[in-house]
Image (cartoon, rainbow over all chains, first blue to last red; front, side, top):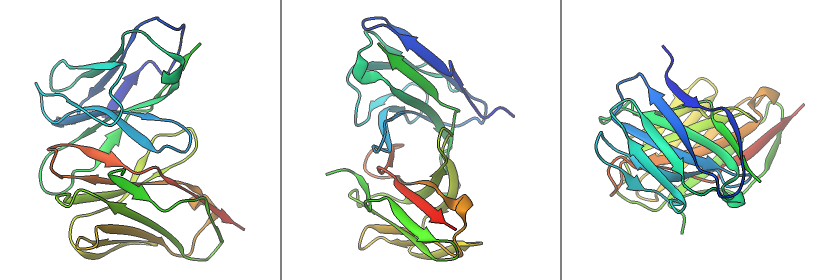
Length: 114
Length: 112
């Protein structure tokens, strides 16, 4: 059981380049999330998808786009990377229901924009 | 105002002491609350979840929830050096369906 799988684990981009971070989960979860983590800032929500076919902005959506391709996959795209987007990115998924709805995280993607 | 705020750190406690971590949230409709632990360079992992007012205990960990005060806490008893990590508080189930929001984290150091 793989859980949440993110690719790639590391990436270096030049300013202005584009890339897509991939995320897939095999837990049949309805909700999926993209966070970024910077020193001292905790996890800041970029976008989330409460269910297949829906996406919503989080705290820091500027410069990013997302696609909920199907129930399993949720991708994050940087159209024109900027040094301010240097960060560690985490994908997470979560089930629905009243209880037992904790989020499970991927291993993270360390992105550097030069 | 951040939706989830944690007490400022870092927090340093001696081995064997009680570590107290606090968190407040702004969305009164939030229903589910979580504490995650994150070691340096690793992904967050769940320690406790709590949904009802009161205390919930699991081994050395106790989570407390007070919805009237919009306050969540985590107590770690008999702290060990291996408890040294960043602790993240999260809230879900508020006015935005499916949204899961984290606080900024508190760095805990347990010194021998």
